[in-house]
Amino acid sequence: MEKSTVTSNDQMSLFRPPIVRSAAGVLDRSLFSKTIPISAARLLNNKIISQCRSKLTKSKEMLLEDRVAPIRSDPDPEFAAKGGKCLLLNPRVKHDDPTTWSPILQEAVKAQDLGVISYNLTLDYDHWNYIDIMKSILPEDAQGEIPVGFAIVGHLTSTYTTNTSPLNTLLHLFSWIKNPTIRTVINKIDDVGTVSEYRTFSYEVLAGEDNMNVEIREGDCTFRFDYSKVYWNSRLQTEHKRLVDLFEPGEVVCDVMAGVGPFALPAGKKGVFVWANDLNPDSYKAMKDAVVRNKVENFVRSFNEDGHKFIPQAADNLLHLAATNQNIITIAPKRPSRNAPPPKQTPSPPKTLTIPNIISHFVMNLPATAIDFLPAFHGLYHTSEHLFTPHTEVKLPKVHVHCFAPKNEDNEAANIEICERVSEKLGVKIVQGDEHETMVWDVRDVAPKKRMFCVSFRIPAEVAFGERRG
Image (cartoon, rainbow, N blue to C red; front, top):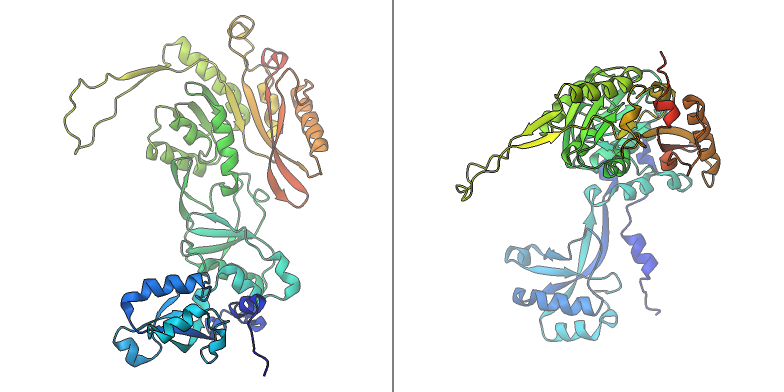
């Protein structure tokens, strides 16, 4: 008789979940239970369990599968009651066919250290991961589009789709159940920004509790807000850090569309002075809370203004503070903790810092319309030309504007189009790599045919020192 063997492909299929296409409309966990007949090495002496495991691992007879514990209680209730254990074996090893045993296993059986027995390994719904479950219920021709990039914001996950089929709902239901940190699954009913100028959205709860109050940790800062009332995008974390890394301690940054403060708060943490503004009252409220919560009151100031007006107002405000000697802040030394021993030296005196009278950077993260705000820079420093080069070593501010553009292979067409749009609003031609230090940064994909970019440039002198408009 031809001896049966288990190939590596056979073994892989053994440990896949059952195919249950019928589960695509309901969540029935029992459908995902599977019993696999394998063999196990019964330990006749628990004191040598580590030794036996090491030998069987070396002979490649131990069962080594992700999320499967190889040491189990003996399947025989009598042995189990006495503390009996067994080691799960590779499916190639057959309890009733000693010719499938290695010399190491044969020797252990002969020495009465081990016995080889049958074992029914049951894997249930909790064993399989999200991808396993999706491949189990989805047709093969749909498995290439399994969604894996669910946006996670605090305790909730969200998606935007108009597909309300039972299958689509189930996809998000599984993402909820398979991630223990997620308590709420929502579907955004409308695209962000199409209904509200504040970039908020309508939503429906697919699973879990209807609780949109989330807590986020990013950039060593904590944010708390109602996700349905403010704008937050977890996928922009890298972009937040990229810009914050450009800011130097002691500089002033004007964040025109600050949201709840993902640029402003981390910048404040590193000693950057930030004038942070947002038109949305709920974002402003959440940002003020974050400023206190993260103890950056000395560095971050919150505003609730229209961005067009805020840009020149921020510049004027700094000049006024300097002219009236209100740009000095005093930072008290950190208090020692209650449990700390008494200091051996005299406590450090308070630190005095001077807020510069010139803004070093403007951040404008409102990709759909930020470029339309650029005319507000006309005449920004129309009475203060003497504060900048060549009269001093101070350069004009850098502006970082986020925007959308069509996707193409090398982004060259997008770079040209973005610079043309900026040039039109400024009234001055800018191109990548020019004397204005213009650079177009590719941020991320946002749709199949659309990408997000950030164009950075130094405000041209003819713009900053010209006449104000409006």
